[in-house]
Length: 226
Image (cartoon, rainbow, N blue to C red; front, side, top):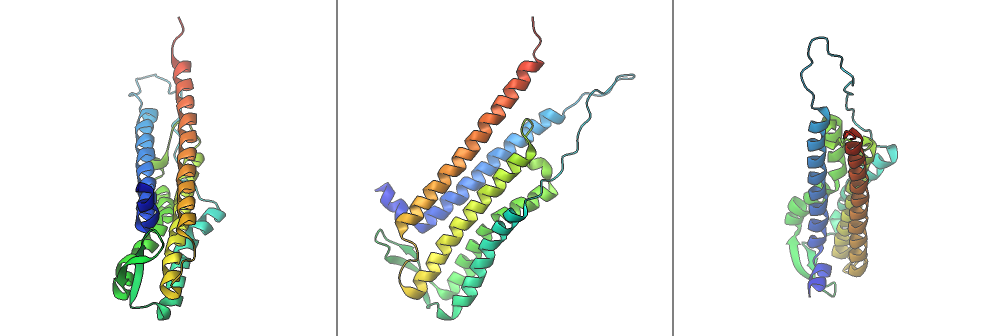
């Protein structure tokens, strides 16, 4: 029963992906903030005391050209497809389907353009938001014990994968509205979504394990030997 509901509700796909992305981002930001406070905490320098370590400036990690391209393409393609297909879209646009892929809920064209369209395009800009946050506040994605580039690129990649799944879902909505048939079967969409979730969990888990080992190793080195 649960699986059937999961397959038929396209918006659940979107909310699960977005919720996972936002949730994982919050966790990573919390980890980064707490560890950054510990890493950069220091006592007041006494007279004649020598400061043994120099605090390095945390600089933004610039995304590679390929990541920028893959981040920009989904919203651009969604806008282009919508403008191209706008003359062909019916007055009622199907936005929800039953287990057999038959629409069971529609939006008026006006409501679709005012709510669903900007929502989908905005959600596909999630990586661009991450890039902007990193450029303006690089401390947010700082994680002592790991190269900052690994953490930031992971966040970028999560956003990019999410944006492309959302693009696929949105393209299927437009295609069905015009041709009364699905571009991608629901089972394939479900499989791709589950693969995406598995990849995100695996990459975050590997990064977490590596981070914990690094932190544990650092703590053991600082402990006095008796």
